[in-house]
Length: 482
Image 1 (tube, one colour):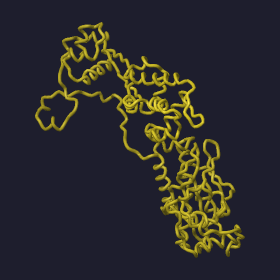
Image 2 (image 1 turned 45 degrees about the vertical axis):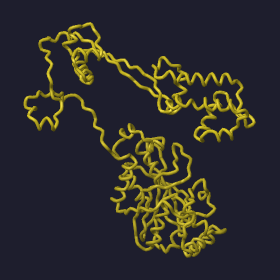
Image 3 (image 1 turned 180 degrees about the vertical axis):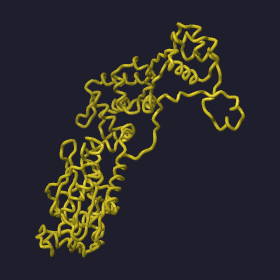
Image 4 (image 1 turned 90 degrees about the horizontal axis):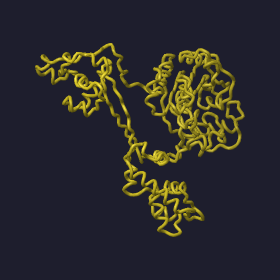
């Protein structure tokens, strides 16, 4: 290639000219040779990129069947007094709704239940312009109407870009200075294959040399998602601290999820806007003796010394099926089954609440839950455990402050210092007698819970919780190893 370019030093050589003159069939050979010559300064490469707009799947269908707005307008013109009801009968549901929206934007309105256009000629003009635009594709982007281009880019699957790169090469003074007699074309082996080794051809072959000093590309390897890596890190910390893991079902009853935790049956958290109640199962049977215990506690405090909440207690409400709103529902069931066995348990698992999605809220998220039940457990032990956990997570500055939760007393909120500010990460406390005594538990139960996503935002430096669940591969690759 270099010898060829020396013969006409002022020429810009195209790919087709290089292939023809060098008698090469594969354009990859020419491009690779040109890049190699460019890397050592023997030739210059000039690249131009042309963007061609072409029809995509929906655009191709529209050219065959007609644009949706065109078909709807033709139907309206052919059916005097056309209304929404008859349109829905004549067109599929997936066409009727979007089609009405398209018509509204070009001047066709619903008035008194009928479709009316103030300027029918303008409607037909817009439809004609759109059809003509599609019929002129494929075409260079600079030849197309920018307004129409923007319109169809906003309609999924109508058009797509196809970029074509054209390269030309011209020789440099350094390339001209190379002696032609030294330029000899040879076939060299760039890759050692099993077929080459199985024959004797490798003995006489010339192997291409590689510059091992050049910077190599970073290999793409598999790795854990940051959330999963964080879960494993938390799990390992609790296991190091002598805790055992508890894993249970998502589907629970309102009784275990709320009644057992002394949350009153008229508490706002029980409403549909906060809790996902189920149609199947709508009801899950609970033993009458368990519900009678909860009923006594809620009405008058039972034998705990509490006065309870007063009012009525509904067993039907207790037996409603729901998606758990916290992992404490599983903790309390474990304690009910093991009321006298000292334990240190933790859970990192999903919970569900009917939250509007925004930068700090999700309807499905993870909760980190822990309990210690043993004789002599006290508030100082709880605070020390939390500080140890966060210290192992890399946050040595931890403080607690008084708070209120329905099923713990005393109750605490946990805060860690991050970038000079105190951030609240969870709640903690000691289970109230109204929670533990009906289940036969006599030892104190220390409990805490915190949101995993909020901790993940802290660890990864995010300000939008939704980033954790967006399939952005580049962002995922650039995350630190947790």
